[in-house]
Image (cartoon, rainbow, N blue to C red; front, side):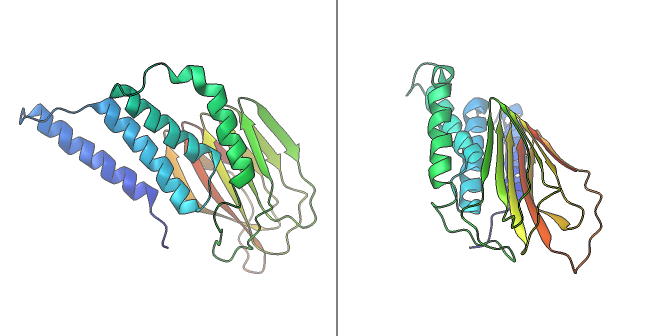
Length: 224
């Protein structure tokens, strides 16, 4: 199945909001609940990210859960504050990610070896900093949720093209990459966040390639 372009979805949403605000301003009988609309959209984006990735990961799961919770709260179906449940929610989502993250769906990125056992680094309300020295590096996933992850990959060796998936939600991820390989940014989503590419290596068709997928939502990703 062809991936859904998240940037197009965000653009369509902003266009829709602009039209609705204009109609409301013109007093044509339309009343907008911006809170419900916004939280519904956040939940929808999380769901699309899960469908696109074909796997259950931490950041999209949080977006879906928080978005649905806030909508139900605004409608009066659920009462109370989500803050009181923040730790159980994080434990449930991170636990599900560790168990099912790379096994719940089949993963088949183009020109990249399929490796369901690649490690996952989670900076959840904390920091993770590590320098890796792996002779047969097969990719990884890095998630920063109200925390940070910094990984130094200059000592790794790869035999085939690999993929790195990065998600930053109210947090930051820094990846230091080896210049002896190509680095290509594949799918990139920035929603009140950004991906900064400072990698200085030069592209060479004879080299193996590290593909980077980055999603930054109220957070940031830095590649060096």
